[in-house]
Length: 373
Image (cartoon, rainbow, N blue to C red; front, side, top):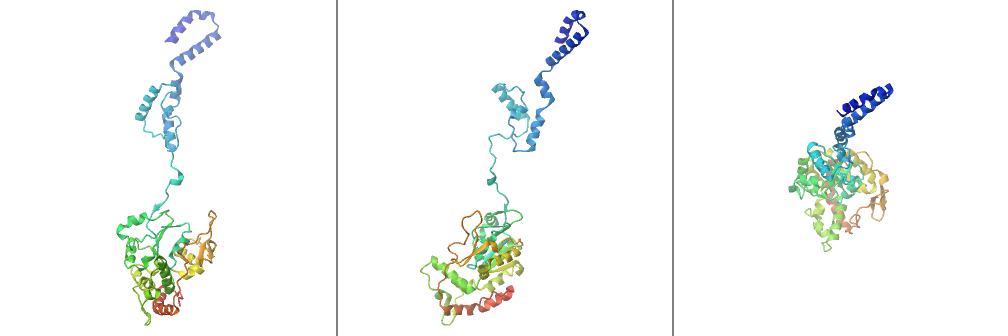
C-alpha cells in the first residue's frame, strides 16, 4: 500500500523524467517495496529451514555436538533477551524429539570399555597336583586366543552349590574366537567332578598333567612340609608297614598317583579323545614340544614355540623369556622348583614296586608309555 501511495505522488512529475529515469525509479521503488514486505530474517528462514539440518547432524552420529543448539530454532538475532531465550528453549524441548548431547558431557574413556563376554570354560586343566599344571597354564596363556582364570576356582569339588552363574563370573572376558580356560588340579581325583563337568558341557576339553607318581608324592610332601614343619616323616605317612612293603593308599599324596583308577572314573563321562595328557617330565626338558601338542589338542595355531622359553638352572625348570615391554623374565613363583626332601632309597624302590602295575595299566589306557621306571 505504501508503494502505491508513493508512486501516485510521483506520477504528476513523470512528464519531466526521461524514459531511462522512469525505469530506474521503478526498479528502486520495487526493491524498496520488496524489502518492506519481506524482511531479511524471514527470507533466510524460508530459504533454508534449520530443523532438518539439526536432525541430520544428530542422526549422523550421537557423539557429534551442536555448538549452538539454539540456532536450530531461534532467529538469527543473537541479542535476544535471556527470558526470551529460556522460553524458546522450553518450546524447543516440547516441540522437538531430538536429543542433543551437551558439550560438558564427558565421553567414556576407551580403556574403560569392556570387550567380550564371560563364558563357561571350553577347556579345563583337571590335574594333577604337583604335576606341572601351573606351568602349563602360564605357558598356554601366552597364546592370544586363550584367556584363563588366574586362580584355582575349585567349583566342581568345593563350590558346586554356588551354581554355574557364580562359576561363569570367575571367568575372564573373551571374544568369540578365544578359548576360556581354568585349572584346578584336585578335580582329577574328586569322584563327583567328571559327572558335574559333563553336565555343564560334554564338549569340554580336559587336560591332565601327569608325572612319575613317586617323584610327585615326594614333591607333594615337600610342599606340605614347608607349611607344616612338625609333619611326620615321609616314610611314616607313606607306609602302613614299611618292613612288609604295605603302602598306605589313604594318604592323599599316594592316592593321587593311582592315575589308572582315577581315569576309569573320567572315562565313564568323557571319551579318551577328549582328554589330553601332558608329560610333566617332558614339560621341563622340552616345553615347546609339549605346548605344541596342547595347542593342537585345543585346535589352536602353533604360536607358542621354543623362542618363548629358556631354562633357568637355578630353579631347574624352564621360564618364559621376557617380553619387550618387561624388564625381567617370567618364572613361576618361589613355591615352584623347591629342592625335594631326601628320601631313603629303599622306600623309593618299594614305592616304585607298588606303583608299577598301576602305571602299566595307565599306559595301556592312554596308549602311551611315560617311562616312569
